[in-house]
Image 1 (cartoon, rainbow, N blue to C red):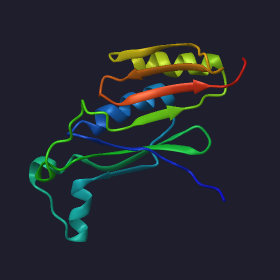
Image 2: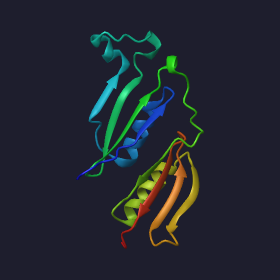
Image 3: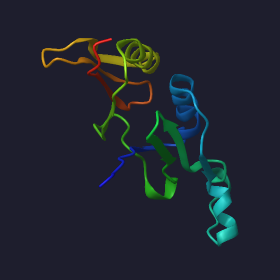
Image 4: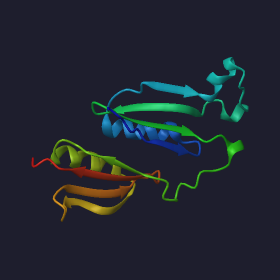
Length: 143
């Protein structure tokens, strides 16, 4: 069985800004970008102030992963962005790649565990990025 797990993160109106930041760190092109205004053709109109917000966005990362996200429509309430809503684990192929990803995501964020050799044998670091999303970088390569 081949299963992929792709994290999906909710934001309070700044999904596009967050994903442009993630794209600057990971590279790649968005393979999906749907705005709430795109749903009007399906008979699902949204208020004018929500038209340009992101209903769904997807950014491929590496060969088999994808980071997905969306804005929460105001009618559904606010997401508590300081709450521990999830952690996203990234497993790069080398320490160099781990450092690049860690340092990129840490810009404007808070380092919770500096990236270094861990007691359990991997090269590990944890942080909360400037959008409140928690990341763990865990590299088992010896490079």
